[in-house]
Image 1 (tube, rainbow, N blue to C red):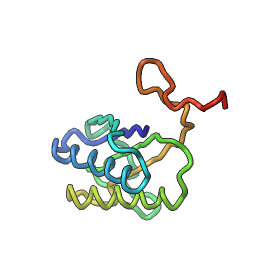
Image 2 (cartoon, rainbow, N blue to C red):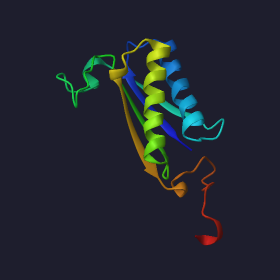
Image 3 (cartoon, rainbow, N blue to C red):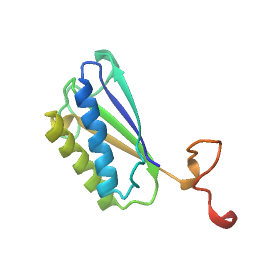
Length: 132
């Protein structure tokens, strides 16, 4: 059910992109209780002028051209503690697996209702039971 959008510089290696995707998926399944095999990701590579961030930093965080923007749309209902643990697992995992700076891992979560998904066939696989 989650959809991860990974926006990264064109200069990032295929190994780096693969590692980022795997870290996100691992954190989803181990921290956020996402079912196994529920791995939907869109990777978009960008030219240097297409990833915009504050050069002077923001909220005490500094950025470099190696920034990765991660946006995840998933079902609403996870607690703040789960979200915090997820952010930490993703940022630390990416830093450990790729050598990227932890400050360059930017994450945004979008909570949606279960009925906001169709996994194919034009069906609402998570339709409410009994017309709810």
